[in-house]
Length: 129
Image 1: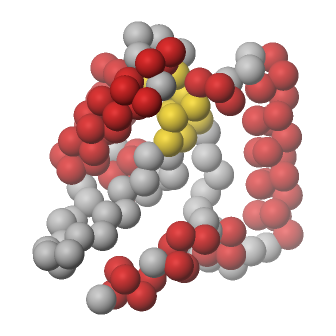
Image 2 (image 1 turned 90 degrees about the horizontal axis):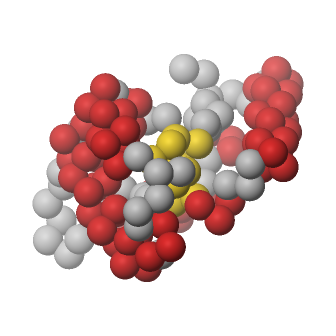
């Protein structure tokens, strides 16, 4: 996968964002959105590979936390979940877990290094430590 930002990639991202704006106009979903981040920093420095099983455990924990912090979403079947398209997030096991949670996945453009979230750069030194 190329991490170069090309004019076509940029146009795809613009189209993608326009589609999300239109979706929100038709069915306002921004107040029903849940997102989670799997970047954990521990002081024991024991790494754990993120695979589909670990990701599903993370989703179970995220569901509990979301139910506590956002009780208005606890029993809804139209929660919109935002995640990137990393391999563990796209696998069948993860998709089945999301289906059981009744969470609908918000489409996400392909990852591009030039448009990566800031935390990936901020925590790079910690990740390598």
